Image (cartoon, rainbow, N blue to C red):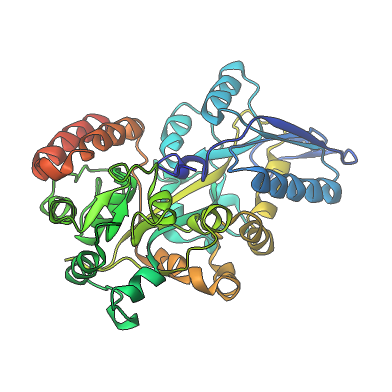
Length: 414
C-alpha cells in the first residue's frame, strides 16, 4: 500500500465509484441565508475522494442521518477520479453540490468562480485550527470548512530501538540527536531512518529550519531562502552519512512500507500510518514522537481537504447545513474513529487524544504545522521539485531550491 503526496489530496487513494441515494422527505419553501433564494427541497449531491470502504461508509452514513432529520434528499458518490469529475461537473454547469477540495485545487476553482465562499457563514467557523483556515483562504476570503487533517511525526520501531540500547531518554528532540540515533539504529539489515523522496516529507525539515516554499500568507516564494536551504542541506547530510535512506532506495513504495517490512527503524509519516500498520504489519511494535526541532524550532507539515460547495448549487442553504453537521465535533470524532483522520475542530482535541493517546503527538503538532502551498499551479512546481529531490544525496540543495524558486515566482508572481 503506497502512501505519497497523493495522500494529502484525498487522504488516500480514491476508490472505484459507488453511488448511494439517501432518501428523505422533501422540504419546502425558500431561503437566502446562504446567499441566494433557493428551493429548500432541491436534492443534494455529494462527491468524495475516499481512502477506502471505511471512509465511504462513514460519510454515507453521516449524510443519510442528516438527510433523514433534515428532510432533504442527498446522494453520495465516491469518485474514481475526483479532480476529473469535479472539472467535468463545473464545465457542464451541473457540479456536485458538496465535494472534497484539496489545498492545491482551491485557488483554481475559487478564481474561476466555481466555489461558493461560505466560510464566514459557518456557525463553527472559530472552532477550526487557524492554520487550516489559512489553507482554505483565497484572496482574503475563507472559502470552505476543513473536513479533517493530518500532520507528520516520527514513527519509531520500539523493538529495534531497544535492541540498539536506546531508551525513552534518547527520543530525539533536536537534529543532532536525530542524526545520532539514526546512525546508531543503522545496521546491515535496515536503515536508521527512511522517508519518501518528496517535498511532502522532506519539506518538514525546511519548516524546522524556519523556511518553506512560500511565506506564511502564501504570497511570496521563499524556496531558496537561507533557512530553506539549511533544511534541505540537513536532509542531504542524513542521506550521505547513511543514517537515512529514501524508501525508494530500500525498494519500498512509501515510508510506511519500509518501516512495516523492517527495512527502517524509524520513518516520517502521518497519522494515517496507524491504519496501515494495523492492517498490513500488525506484528510491528511502534511509538510516535513529534518531529525533532531544527535550527528555528519545531516544525511539521499538515495535509487537509475541505468541504467545497458549488457556486452553481441550487440548494446552498441545505449544503451549508450539511457541512456544519459533517464538521461538528461529534461527527468529526465519529469519522476519526471510522477511518483514522484527525478532527479539524479544536473542540474535539481532548476527546480525540483521550481515545488515541499513542497518536497524540500528531495532534499536538498542529500548533506548529505548516500548510503546503495553495497557489494555482503550485502542484506542478512541487512535482518538479520531487523529481529533483530523488537525487538529493548527490545534488546541490541550493541549486534545487533556486530552480524551485524560479518556478514558484512564475506561479505566484513574486
